[in-house]
Figure 1 (cartoon, rainbow, N blue to C red):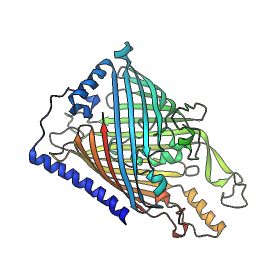
Figure 2: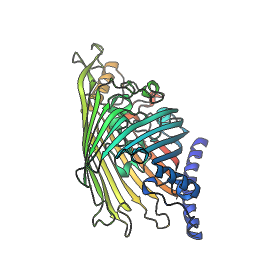
Figure 3: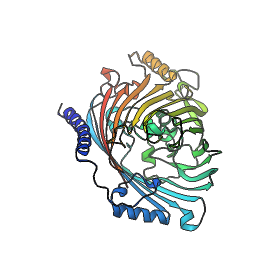
Figure 4: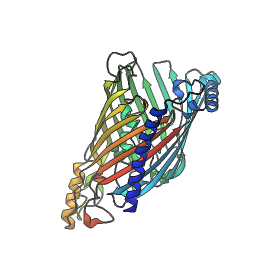
Length: 471
């Protein structure tokens, strides 16, 4: 009870702190604006814009062709109810990036370079307390210092660009701007259907990148065509869950695994401030993995894998694939505001074959309110939900297991997540974000491994308080 009270107190304190800041600002007026160095838009937001010396340093680097970035995420979170056990955790992430414009540095027109790395700290709440599929914190990972991306990119004017090196796909494909930029749960970035169905912890995504090549062609201002070819198993771990152990520092650079091919078409409209209509983006895409995938229900002799008389070797399928669609759409635009100020919604859907995947259907949706409060013009508020359906073949396997073992096991079916969040900007480059999530059917409704007599893992309530500082 003391732990539950502590978590709730921290969360509520965060909310009151935000409202206190707002009312204090309203009472005393805006603080005097220092004579800061004007930074290019691509460097914003950053706390350097509030500290003249830092702003001057960052601009001088930029003028030389370098963009040095640091972001630190500090998340306090806990589940006072539900999961396999209750508790609190701290999760931290230092994100380090160096971008180099080789046109400025060496006269190589259109060529750029990036290297970035992570320093990850803390205890994984989803992995230890909840055992859910949709990780409650997007920065959750094993504590480590690891290389992430390392690439060069050549742009061919405004028509195309090609990127080669160690790449991640989660910042390129199936992205929702409204989903990935606000919510704390990882599924609103790289969706659960990908993290569950692709080997190596969900393919090339945080915290593991992998060698690959990515091509973008932009025939006009509205249309973009993307394709990416990646090593299909970043750590060579398959579906063992050991990917972060087998590649502890991001230096494996594997090339020998069956490849993963991804492709996407994007159409954007009304993106300018002067556009008469509401801004939006529509995306259609798909992926194909060339490796072997085990059937979730049947063995190679055609019997259920739960049948004691089967040969206990799963039937193998050649390759795996999925298709998806996404939309970000402004619903109402704040009078006099930018194209992304007001109310906007997002939705995504994806399907994959049910015979070889843990999840065969995924959907998420949400609504965001951006800059509605005149005294807090950079604050964002949102409500979102995601639904992950476990494959029918998996439920049939559970049913067969219950039959052959003569036990009353629950049949796994779905995991549903609801998230409510408020992101407050203290100054440019510094935000505080109280967040609440509720996880229905953690793990898809699997049996509680610690207390199997109670049946499914109990639904979990999760409170999060995040702060992020970016330089």
